[in-house]
Length: 224
View 1 (spheres, one colour):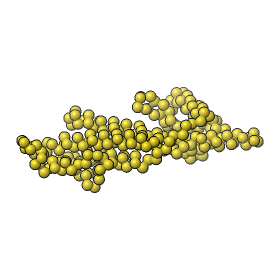
View 2: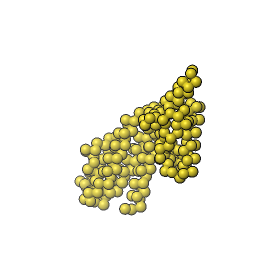
View 3: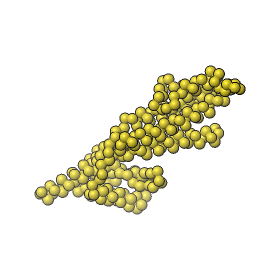
View 4: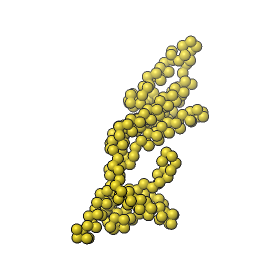
């Protein structure tokens, strides 16, 4: 593979990575969402740029197998005519119709077809992801979240345990049966931080719900 092609393939995955960065994890829903329509549109735009790069790669892969006629270029080449049938935008792709066109002629290399399918599936996923405006954490939630993360960080350094190991943090929630599954995340700026998933009695539960239950338990203890 030429250096040019290698860089082009790399740029495809960089576009996909940028598209995924437009998502955020919604703690209340326990899933990734778009904060607004603009974020979703930006993500789809990155995927379309990835597709445009793939389309250019396809042209490069086609040319060695096509007939070039002086004065006419590839216009008279029946094989190259298949490349002209490729849509300009990702949303126009129909896998049943276009998948085979992305298979490199004569060599039957399906690399580009497989990438095409991944881009189409990713676009379909993004179209179905909910648009939910992030709910700002309350001051109390933020304080508890910071304490939980600090507890994990201290244990991580002390025991050198694997960062995704479940950690009991019930003491921060009036000793409710709460544990977390923390994992390390590195953002686009190279900053690594901890993100936690909260579980109450084995069920993934939003932090604000757990805190409300802990507060109710505290109130019951005081007889309020």
